[in-house]
Image (cartoon, rainbow, N blue to C red):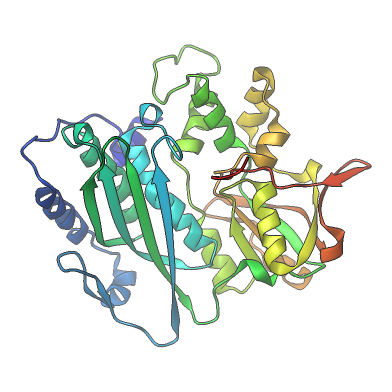
Length: 365
């Protein structure tokens, strides 16, 4: 991780919190930070729609004619969604907001506001954890002009619990759902696949962000994969283009894994799909590193999850209108939508087989 990146997200260490600080002191400091979020001039007219933010029992937003509000929530629980010993607090704050911004991108919405509820045990309250967590959160929020307008903080017995809520806006009838795909549509994915899952496997094998092994040939590759897991980048720009330009017929973000999320999209649209394995944009470090560590790059790309790329369908008539890149992120056509009776399948050469959902399940077997 570059030094400037560490400073931006607050990854560097800070002094321990005062044990005398209570939750009201924290709320005051967070409110001061939220109030200091000065939006760019081009967005200031929009923020006039926020009538009341932090400080009352609820936020008040003025409704605007011709626009729709998109709301999403994500729950992150320690030892289920993250591990405290491998996730620096600033990166956790970043990810808490990033996963919600990814959901907004998957609806074609522009992110506007956020609410954050944080439950932490006493030992973390008396450390630098809270300050670094909010540093990472606000760093990402400011990049996308997202205003924190409320939340809560509480003590938990042992584990950290985070509830991230985000609100976005889009022009009326421009939100993109999972249910709009049609047979004949082309299937695309942003960015690359498999890196977040590879990073998780490396964490499970003992790798950590920032450990001083820079003399090892693979150190930089390992760090890149760890950050794809711990510090994901939501594809906000692509979501806006696909929604505002009416390019995508159906859209979903890849949080549970390509195989699972494609099946979600096909189920909602009552269609099938055929994915071509040779077209999948497997992340370069995954291909370079994981084969030597007994990790199958194709399986990571298909089933790994938490890449937070966007998976979307486009009618053939709109394919030529797609930009090659948005915010430097390319797209790849990986297949096509079929009739529902065709099922969801993947091909590799002459071999074709069912692409069953094998991504993450909270309550699966």
